[in-house]
Amino acid sequence: MSGLADRKQAKDSLKQALQRQPVIAAVDLGASKVACFVMKPDGVRRADRTLTTAGVGYVQSRGVKGASIASMDEAAEAIALAVERAEGVANLSVQGVTIATSGGQLASQRVSARVSLGARPISDNDCSRALASAMAQIRLPGRKVIHLLPIAWSVDGQKGVRDPREMFGKSLGLELLVVSINENVFQTLCHCVERAHLQFEGVVAAPFASALAALEEDEMELGAICIDMGGGSTSAAVFSGGSLVHIDSFPIGGEHVTADIARGLSTSRAGAERVKTLHGSAIASSNEDREMIEAPPRGDDPGAGPVTAPRSLLKGIIAPRVEETLELLRDRLKNAGALIEPGAGIVLTGGASQLAGVREVAVRVFDRPVRLGRPRRVPHLADAVTGPAFCAAAGILHRAAFGPREAVSPKALAAVKASRAPIDPKAGPVTKVAAWLRDNL
Image (tube, rainbow, N blue to C red; front, side):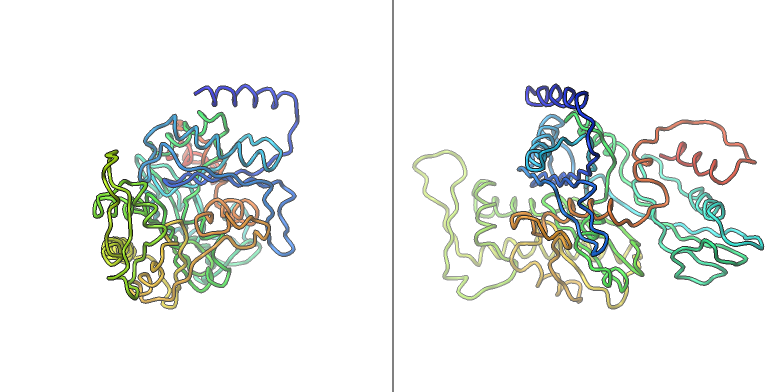
């Protein structure tokens, strides 16, 4: 822990000596890697909606197993090292970070509300009343809300209203998407960031962030499913009508394919990962029965030779796991009643999506067009960080720069503490919203 102690001492000294320009720092905490993207305020170009990162750093993940933190010290060290590398490139100091994760049993639910209006233009107060009415329906014991996203407003039943303010009508309707995470996981992430001597600025659902980086505006409007295939989990963000309408996640990812290979070939996990990267595929290829692959033996016997097997055996191990994972996601989305447009396409992100043949399997499982997603509108990224594995970190920067606007500030959601105070029945809508935040977050 000496590295963390040195970092804390240096950061405290710098904080006192300099008045720093605020920066946006995003950390993608995954099972395979930890990546940090740093952006200065002048890195946002609103004219063409592009971003310029000031620094990028990434390291092999440690202390994360599946979609959960397994070792607080190791995970904090990995976060600190990734941030330090990004700081070195950017030549600045990062004070706080926003974490992207697909762990913590990510889930979403939709709530609707309707309030009556007077004979005057719709005001912010009317929107707050609708929001308070929707939030009063939310009961999520043991869970922490991380996103409150209006799906759609309606005036007198007319749907598709983006901003109802200054409009006239008799009733105002709101459909709200609530994305939540296990409360204990949220607190663990917060504590882990603080152990890295950084300020915790909130959590973003990884598939949501990846979608913001990888999807085009037309795809969000016409309907799309962004599937984030990470090392420890697979998650999805469903868009319709320009809004996020559903989030789901489960703890099966690329690491499970690696473990299957290690068992099937009697090799080490490192050897299995190498074989998967060099020779792995989820679809059949020509001459795969005659093409032989080699993997290091498990254990440290110097006399043991390499494990040899036909490439068809490797495909026979990988394909069922990939197909099973995508079928499970398809069935979960169907059972949840997710609002998926008939023509919605699929965009694959995350490191595990880069495995050969995954796109073809996804086409067969979902019977929809599928493409591989990459961080868009970040033109100055180095080639090493332009792949699908870096969409989540880039997406946090997109969210900070261009939205979408959330019903409650993400920073407020992260910082609010539980406080049980009675609510005055005659209190105004804003007071009721604040009370909901106190009692439910």
